[in-house]
Length: 142
Image (tube, rainbow, N blue to C red; front, side, top):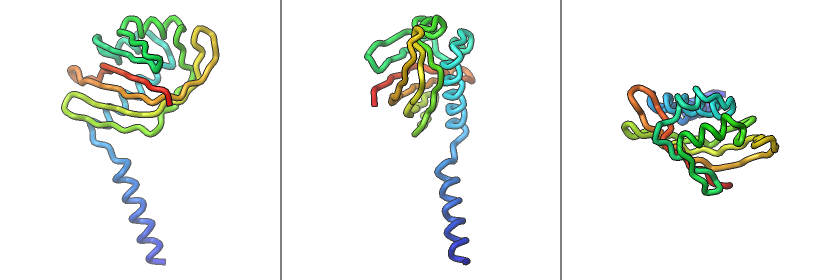
């Protein structure tokens, strides 16, 4: 019985340590969540606030968009995320730069055409003043 309790305690401690995030990582994770919600909502103001002016947004097709084109595509419904599920996320913060990798699964309704996506994503975040802004994104097909 004591052995079982000790093993359970060690397991719980290891889970907490693995899942622990530093304050900068937690702030980047919150920015990723804000970005995900902005992608789904397609609200211009939310998108403009979370992405950097110098945004380079790479699609899995190889197409690359700047900030204005990226935002207009979402606001117009040309690109429309209905649901987004992010898994296997890792965050690495070095100074004012953060690298985020995750897998994205979701449903879309691009220009009124329903679909699904499953992508690998690399996000590059830059701390500008006190806020994390998305500077670059590259998707690739899984």
